[in-house]
Image (tube, rainbow, N blue to C red; front, side, top):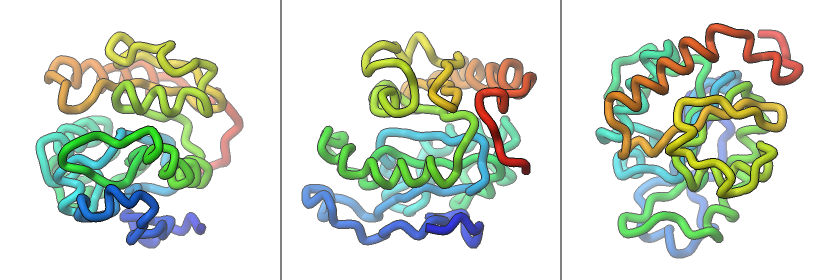
Length: 211
């Protein structure tokens, strides 16, 4: 895979017709791979595509849930398009999922998360972000073993929302599920990044290539 920024959509040319999970192939509309700036310092990860993203094929678009994250990205200066854009213009942010297919009746199984893990691992390796934002408890737990010194279940994401946790070469800023967020909790997350992450040199977490 190559990190050239030819496109914001699936910039690493991952398999857009993936059939690794038989139970999802007939239920999904699109395989939704990551989207954004391949040189991003901030990586946002949710559990699975929401209905809008399944329809459009672009992460966090096509519905109110996606629009909430787009609003957050805009307020942080990562999106140069207004919330609700069908193809957000992102800079310094990459958005992706643990699993790449939406099932209308259920969340992903543990096996489906494991099957999709190589896609996420490849994106993390290629992007080499400074800050990872796990969205939701299941996402944090899935990332905990590889990217933190915590075990699954050690961190309550609801309590840790809008705080910073030191990881293994990264910092993590947990976020509760977008569907569960009030405007107050969204504002608290944005405020934490602006006042506590942007205000200091978060690059001290590890060595970083020049930009």
